[in-house]
Length: 241
Image 1 (tube, one colour):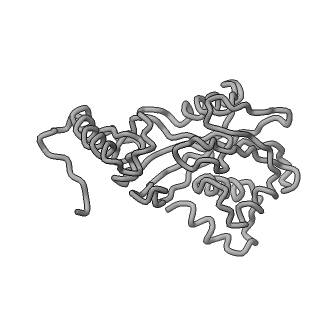
Image 2 (cartoon, rainbow, N blue to C red):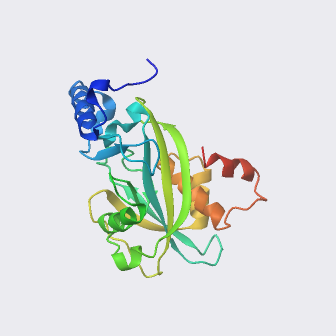
Image 3 (tube, one colour):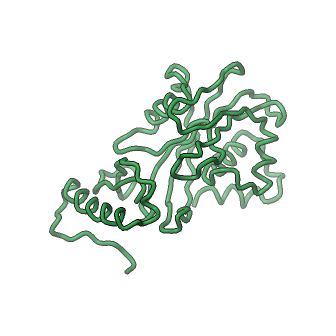
């Protein structure tokens, strides 16, 4: 089959659709479908577009099975504005080794999926506090900086991630130190931009894949990467699929 269809008997009720799909997913979970081992008990909206009303909701871990477009927010936590690679810095997180996805990989200071009916700006404030103990009076200063989109095979190889990531920049004072708050982060380190670029360019498997994309977008926007760089046009074009 090329698609999954809901029976017309369910009508147009999001609740009825969600319950029916949920029963199927629980059956698949009990059957040991690899992707569903990371079950999170988080409702993920299924919509025709970002601003459209939800048609139904599914368990977050199941979204790639159906190729559902998902939305999230990533925050570049930055210090310095000199434009110099060896002076300006980016906060880098190391994911907990107990995470269901990409355990132990390098990550953003703050990142998270958009929950059902959650606004991107609210997501940033919530995730800043939960993941890095950043208070609202600081996180509310985060600036939206566009988006990236991509299609990626899920790491379980059972589905496709069709994601849109809203990008945010937050300039932090040099004395600021994030503190892990929810057990999802093992450590935080402050890297100069030159080290970040060298790590990404080394084809390192250390990074969570979508994090690398958001960082590259930031490097372009802030002029750390310029049109004189070989492959610049192709690189910029690849960030929006």
